[in-house]
Picture: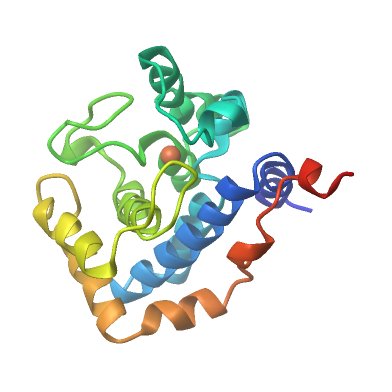
Length: 208
Ligand SMILES: [Fe+2]
């Protein structure tokens, strides 16, 4: 079993909600790569990066990640460290860093420097990480969480459009719109197994 699969399985056991999010982000990222005309190797790296992009959330208690109520500023700062925690797991044996590592580290960076953890600007952000960032934000906005309801598709696209070229990769936003208009996103997701929402449970939820 390869490293990404092992990590993915560990995350699924510990935090099925994050695993489910990652599955969907991986499928969307690959679909965006296809739409952008990337070669097969780069698409596969984006998919694999998507599968473990929130790896560092292993260092954040699940009770914080999925709390319905508000977080303290310290708890929010801890969550914002997850790209750094994730890189700590993988970089030892990967020099120079692969796209997968860059995706883990940079998927919350934004083109104008407003992201985290390193406030990088466009020219310093790995392009695959920029594309996974779009999939990440879109998946998060269109999904229900313990602390909020999902946005509509239209509202989510409006938000991405508002940040087109300032927060988000311009061609990537256009590619997402094209995928949705062509319904290609559904087909892309069918290509990889995605846990149905109703099956997202914590191990202890089945215990007596
Ligand atoms: Fe993340």
